[in-house]
Length: 378
Image (cartoon, rainbow, N blue to C red; front, side, top):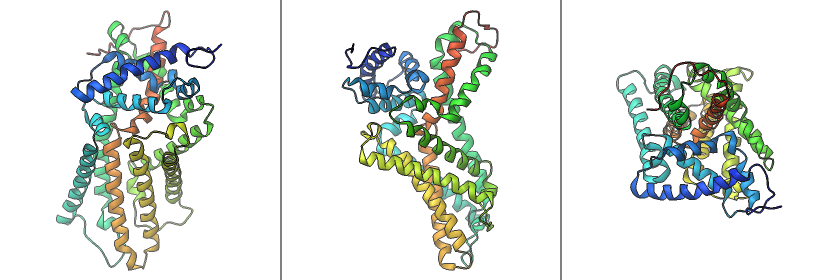
């Protein structure tokens, strides 16, 4: 027997109905926010976190089969954008999601700060321009670049953690107000965060797009590999040394670059063709993230190729320096407009929501020991 949504009755019916009903309320809240920029609503934020969690993973497929009149992918992505804006209490994410001018300003600001740092290094003789041979680390001294990367990473990391804590305070609001959640519960269930971050397993909940899970998993492996090469190991990764083809520095970089290019190009092509449901509607943020990843990966591998081909070839010295500068400016802009405040954050919110759901379930178990350090939501 089919229900009002046009598909067979199942255990997900109540949750589907709840999702559609809540989406109509969300539309009204979004309209109010656009008009007044006042959008504090704890109930919607706590409920909405389920969009990132196991409870609603695969619901895009359910919505598609329901034939309920909603655009499933657009519904899910619109809710996620709204939630990312909500969890960022600075308001920066909301501005980036609703204003092209804010995006352009953020990009120009990031580029300006990076250029100012490079000019400072050259003005005080810390860096110097060498044109009669290829010396990337003389023009862009790796020690200082690495120091800037670590400072920038610390700032972005603090922003990510702050927004994750905001999400946790909303989701665990009732538990934090009425109970003393033990540290043991948080630690015992943390394995769920690690497992879902590393495996992206909930992607497999949608049987209509099995390849999506593998693509995303490979992309994540490439992204994390490149992140490790740039943040803790930039001193090793950025070098003037010419390594043999079998050197791990080269193969790790090649693997990460291939994964980043393949996934970002596939994402952009999919949005151009609009064949799959998830690609039918694209917000500016849906284009910006893969486009910046693709441009950064291509410009980065070109710097590598030019550096190797440019040994003894003076015609490639200036192009290599120019490509490196463009690469750095692009990556800094991507990080400033994505990490903590953009589409990038679903990489953290998804496993976090799974983790918080498991914490809630553990606390709800009869006889669960609640002795520990109290955590207040206020």
